[in-house]
Every structure is written in structure tokens, then in C-alpha cells.
Length: 344
Ligand code: PMP
Image (cartoon, rainbow, N blue to C red; front, side, top):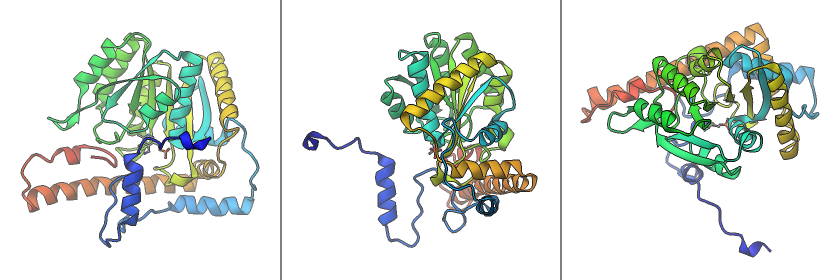
């Protein structure tokens, strides 16, 4: 039966990670996956998470199932760091990747399998496979202009204007993977206006909130859509900003016109989660909920996140200065300091 199975599509990130792990050089630096590393080049657990683990160990909740739709306290707190408003259908997901998958599945099953999904390239390598998996068509446009080494606003606006009415558009809300090039608030405003005219459906992916310019600044595009009363989906990952990568903690928020629509959307998401995986992992969301609900741990989290963000900005500056003032490398390297987040 299994002899006819062919090998899967190679994943460059998977292969690069395996090669990096097996490289024995003491001075190796892994620049592949989007993970924050400390001065020693190692993973670093947040102090606030360490504290929440101790609190959780004392309460000892055991390992019972979560509700199909996730931990309600976590979802309330998680949606609060992205935006504060009603008309929301929020469910827990297997981190940001699971949120993108669930969003795609929901669009394909509950909106239309024929909806075209526009993605600016280059981009995170998982969008197209996630859309293919649920039978949605991906259409690419240019997000980045290599000649100016910056975000390509004209191409984005043109794609939005020329897309068939009611298309879907995936946007990374901040810290674009892999270019680090994000639209400015003014450009976001034009994007949102154009989306509204075309009656398009925005799908935001926020995987690096807090690592760009600040928690609120990085959620600018999402909150702008909410203020301008667009209906949209927002995928949220807590992998990076809580350093909870392996706990697979995330959520999908669907912002609806009214509470009746939100209730129905929530009910459909409940079905999709139930049929696919019954419920989501409990531990990471319990930790995030504890940190966000506790005044002291919450303040510590914000301080630790600011320290990560400031260190990233300072590393960019150091790299820029090495290339220009010390090595006199030909060319213009200013994009390195203009970009945000982990990527360049
Ligand atoms: N979106 C983007 C743009 C990403 O870079 C990543 C992680 N590399 C994710 C989503 C998903 O991350 P996770 O599943 O760990 O939350």
C-alpha cells in the first residue's frame, strides 16, 4: 500500500535547520528561522513566564481538555493586546500557523472556495501551502521592491484595485517575514481605503507583535481596520512575544459586523476545530492568561518585550555600522536600520 507514496515537497527551512544543527563550528550563527536569540545565540525563557509557571504549578490544574474553542480567559486577554472592541469571534489555535490554517479553512468552507487570495511576495513560505491545502487559489503581487530595498506600496495598491471584488488579502501586520519592510501608518490608511472600496476581505497575520515598534504600534493596521469598520480576520501568534514557540499558543479573531454574525462565525469555527483536532494545547494559553491578568507579571512582560525590541534595533545599528563605517562595504545599507523585527 505505502510503496506508491512519493517523498514530500522539500522544505528549504527544514533542511537548512538540520544542516545548521549538525554543523559543529563553535562560531556558527543560525539565521534561518524567525526566532529571537539572546547574546549567547540561545533561546531565552521570559522571567514573567517562569513566574507564571510557578503560579500554575501551585494551582495544579492538571491536564484536562480545554473547551473546543479554547481558554476563554486567554482569548479575552489575547484579543485585548491586539484591539479592544466587540463583535468578535475568537478561538484558540495551534499557534499562528494553526490560525492561518483555520482562517483559510473557514474562508474556503464558510465564505467561498472560489475566493482568490492575494499575497505580496516574497513572504512567509507557509501561506501558499496552507491555502493550497484547503483548495484556495493564491495570487501573488510584489510586496517588496529589490531596487529600492523597501516595501512596494504602488504594487500593493494596484493589486487591491485590480482584484475581483470580494477577494481576500493576506497582510503581515508588522515585522514582515522575510523582508522587515512594513507599510507606514499613512500607507496602511490608503490600503484600508482601497480594501473597503473593493469590498475585499483582509486576513492579518500578526506573528511578531511587540518586536517592531511597540505593542500598539505593531497592531496599528489591525486596529485601523476595526476603527474603519471593516470585517476581517486576524491570526495571532504568542510564540515570539512570549518566547513560547514549542507550546503552540495562538488565536484566530474574526471581526464581524454585529454580535449575531460573530456568534454564527464562532459556531462554525467550533465545528472546524472539533472535526479537525477536538481542542487546542492548554499549557501555553494558561501561562499567557496568567501573565496578562496579573498587574505585576504583565508589567514585567512589557518590560522584557521592550528589551528584546530595543536589542533588535541596536543589533541592526551595529550591523549597519560594521558594514559602512568599519568595513566600508560598497552600496547603500540604510534599509537594515529602517526595517523592523527579526528579518532583513
Ligand atoms: N506568520 C509568520 C509571518 C511567521 O513568520 C510565522 C513563524 N515563522 C508564523 C506566522 C507562525 O508561527 P507560529 O506557528 O510559531 O506561531
